[in-house]
Image (cartoon, rainbow, N blue to C red; front, side, top):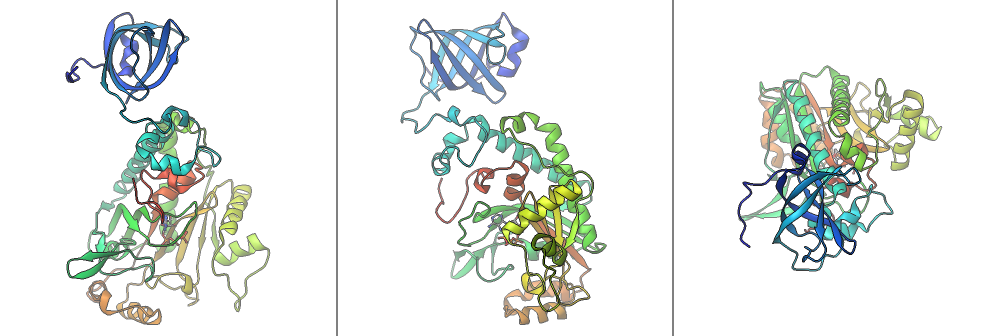
Length: 439
Ligand code: ATP
């Protein structure tokens, strides 16, 4: 039969208001149970699911078919949603022409590290995304993006989109993907760092961008991917790095509150809980944090350098135990561990920089930036970076620039930790890693 359009379609969620009448729904077949004389078929659309009751002698559709079904709607408290349709007419609009490698309905369980094979899930991403579990992550991501957008707009930040094809890197020379750009080589942007600083130097003062960032790093971990979505923020005239941490703290709390009021059903499907942050997120100097997790006090001659992944876990356990917070800020990283644009402290070996660690994983980095062009040049020279290639960036500062600072949060890492997902890839629609470029 030919596709007749969907004028007569009713969404499944609206069926409860027309019990005992006839209706047509359109959607996908996700389960079939043949009980001999009759069969139960589950059909889903964007609004919910409906149980169909159908005579088994009829030719039944196969799993994952797209169907249009007309029938009488009746109440039945034993049906999964309390109503069902007695099918009078069932049209198969489209049915699979290839054997399914798995039944997406079998994925409707919370995501666990010992769950279905992750490679199979992503090899057949079009199918795994048909499961309620994976769709719930997509919906929740959409709500998270709305919360982030609302938050920044309500604080005078302007949303920007900057170019992802660039002439050089900002986060260190390695880790750049090369692309052929007419007669020369260009790179995929590792971060919008230089552009967001350029915008913060205009009278707009406050900008944010949500966009892709590319890192050609040969990681094979549960927290790294080669293309991630970066939530980048930059503002002029911050009251020191504490104001930047205040904004980030408010943002995280706003996101958790928004998700817990809008996404209870999706959180329920994932059988997870959003992080607990009662009161303030603790803020620790790196040396303090190191002493807490190792029991050894760093000294002037042997200062702390960074936290290992295990230490990030431990410091979060400490924060939960002592501050009822599953998040903790660690700040004042040494100069050697931060990019050339990071402002130093009065103690010139330390920078005005910070990381936010959530449930044992660094989800963001931020700092006050250098706005003095002479200092910037000196830093570039010290780090052996090419001043020529950054000349248009340096001009921003040579033409006068306000003090400024900002931070970047990885969207997928934030989601991974908000939902307690065992691998960052579950927080991506189509992850890119060293071994995966398709689908
Ligand atoms: P890491 O040390 O964990 O590799 P990084 O210090 O290189 O991260 P930054 O350059 O400071 O990360 O980037 C800021 C944020 O961007 C990180 O806190 C993280 O949330 C996200 N991010 C960076 N690299 C990746 C990646 N390869 N995959 C996913 N997210 C990333």
